[in-house]
Length: 452
Image (cartoon, rainbow, N blue to C red; front, side, top):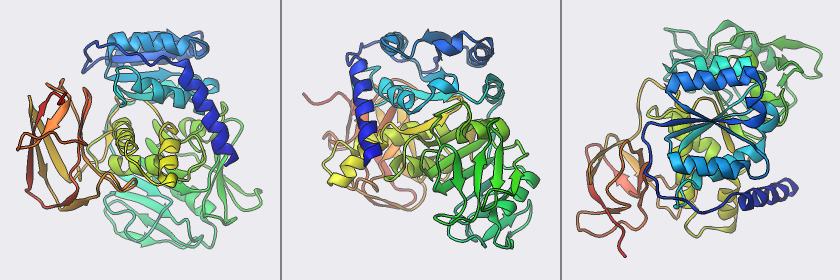
C-alpha cells in the first residue's frame, strides 16, 4: 500500500504539469516523430540512435527537456504534427517510471478525447550502442520461444524452445526443431538448466511471470531455487541458491521479452538493471514490463494475449490493450477493479522502436474488421465468447487500428441506432460485441457523427 500511495502522488504532479487543451489538426497516418530527451541529445552516441531512426522511417527529430515545461512544449509540437508513431530516445538515467507515466498521459492529450493518439515506445539501453543495434534491426517472425510458465503444451506453436516451471524446480520442457516437446530432468537445479538451454538454443521470444525486481528474477515462485540477476556491467547471470555458483547468459539472440506477470522488471531505475541487461547481454530489441509492483495484471497479461494472437506488433498490442483499459474504466466497477484499472493504466513500459514489426507467423485473432469509408464489417473466424464491459477484467470488444481518417466519431447499427459503448477515434475502432459468436458470423455497422 505504501508503494501505491507514493506512486499516486507522483502521477498527480505529472498530470498538473501537462496542459489539457488540444487542437484539431488532422492526424497523419504515416508520420514518425523521434523525440530526443535533452541529455541524450548532447551525447553523440545517442544522437546516432536518433539519426538511425530518422533514416529508417523518414522521421522528424524533436529535442525536448524532461524538466519544467519541456514536456508541455513537446506536446504542443505533437499536437501540430499529429504523428502515427512517437519514439522517445532517452538515456537510462531519465527513463524511470515517472517518465513512462508522463509519456502515457501525453499520448492521451494530443487531441481532446480520453484515448491514446499515437503508437509509441521508448528507446533506451545500458549504452547507446545497445539502442543503435536494436533500432537497426528489421522486422521479423517469431519462430522459437521460451516461457517460465511451462507445461506439456506450453511450446505448442513454436518450432523450438524451452520452458521452466514457476511451481516446481524439477519441471522443465524442451522442444528441438522438428521434434516433439520433451520433459528434461533438472536435478532440482533450474538455474543451471535454464542457462544451458539459453546458451545452446537461439530464442526469439521469452515471457515470464513470478517474483522480480529491478535487480533479479526468481525462477520458482516463492522458493529459493535459483534466480537470474544482472551484473554491474549489465551482464545476466543465472545463480544457484546462495549465490556462489553462477552461469552467465552468453547467447545474444533474444528479440522480444515480455514480463507479463513480474513486478518492477520493466523499471529502468539505473543504467544497469534487468531491462537494460537483457538489451545489453541478450540482444533484446523489444522489452515490455511493469515499472511498479504488479498485482492487478490487466496490462501485462493483456498485452501478452494480444501480441501472441499474431496480428499486431508489441507496440500496437500495448496501444490497443491500453485503449481497452481506458474503455473499461469508464464504467462503474468494484472498488478493487476501479483501483486496479487506474493503477495499471500508465505503468506498463514497452522499450524499442514502435514501428518495428516482430510478430507471430499465424494470426489467431478470432475476427476480421473491414472499414470501407463509413461501412464497417466484422466477420468472426472462429468460435469465441466475449464478456460485457461491466466485467472489468474479461470484457473483450472487437478492436482494430485504422489506416485512414474515419468519416465520423460514432458507430451505428443496422437499425440506425447509435452503439452507445462503441468508440471511434482517428486511430482505432472499438466495438462491443458481448455474447457467443461462431465462425462466419458477420456484423455490419456504419460510422457517423455523434447524436447531439
